[in-house]
Image (cartoon, rainbow, N blue to C red; front, side, top):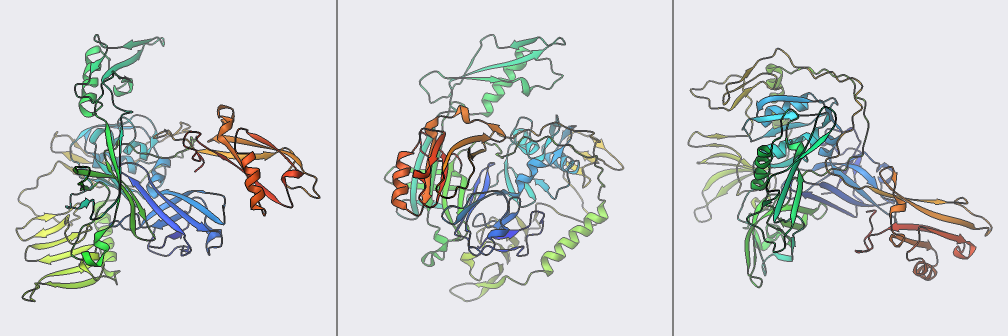
Length: 609
């Protein structure tokens, strides 16, 4: 697929927007399980839409074999090097990190009701929706103003820490799965389709003991540290031979009104050990493989791999045959094939790059849509989907021996083996799969009277028995929790009034964003050979100047001119070791441009991306 460029405020990605970036040199999308989701594009400065590529604008790209094209917001465009710019873009769901929501708490509530309420109470207008297949009610609190993405995951008390699960980001729709992936029987095997195999094992987060503590503060501000009588709790199953203790502060795990005691601290620590395998190292496998379903000789192989799927990896020479989960995918959008797939286990954390901001938020009051408008919206949406389609392929699938058709297929590709979105209708029932012909079929009506669907919108529903956990209004303001017996009825729902809010939005996971600035003590342009200046490099982490904290050997100076041989000689003399350099007429023959890079002295890789 060729990436498409859109304006920053676009919400409908069915058009070609500003235009298709047909001059794109490369486009890769990397997605991690409950983690980062980014697109990196290389584009020439001679490309048709180079002048239109700006930060905050949106690029639509295909992220994997099975998902529909996704929107990625540009956050960084590098300075052209050799006539090529590198464009960094984050999935549109990262916009959630800049949408504020006020404090809020409830009695036990399902995640669907909780997040619908939080999304509806957001202090910034947005287009995001949420759905989940979790139904268990739990205590849920937004303890202080924060971003919607922080509410979803990345910190204590979030949806991810309360209920667990795996997120799927489908443009403006947030889907919270108990288990996102499937086991479709895909086998990646040495000698068959395995092209690259790397095994890694990380013990940085492996421990033999846990030392828990909590800090309480009295009215006068005096602090008392609560610890256990036995001090540390041993981890029974650990792969380490040397003692290694994790010292963890559990203060934030308790509610503000809770009187923290040694027994409560011990209970928290034991629960933490039960839910976190601290004694086991985290193995990962990075593999590349050839997608057999794209090869003509394997036309009968109807298998696909997506993030969070479980696959079988076999390597006869290494004696490996394991069922492993896909935790990261890197996809070549132009070639429509995987560059690499990483298998193993990963921490359930949300990653985001968010600058510290101080934001004043205006008062907001939201109207609550009532049922008739909800019904009409569902009808309009269904009508638009069905009547607006001109593509697709209708296939009668028949028996190879008798030639008799036995099922009707509606496909997004003329061939069954290439189809991703499939409607399949036979004597067993009618079903839709977004994972190819072999399914799974998550939307279905089967011959035994069963209906399987994520969401059903109905005008009138007549039933003998309805089994449910929570009956709720669309906006979550009124609901009946059949598990706890709690009934809440409200005539309307409004957001809380927040005046002069100056609190900072929490950073979900601290991440450095480095930039290097070169200044000249005597101007930037020189004439008639009158050249005498000092170039100084300054490095900023966000807005903080951290140059003095860095090793001079991390600074690499280079010169680019029309004389490549002389440049190579100059660069060798200025390979590193100084944060500033003196430039004279001896350094410039006619014309020259000077650059400085910041590197990791261990890996020799650039830290500037």
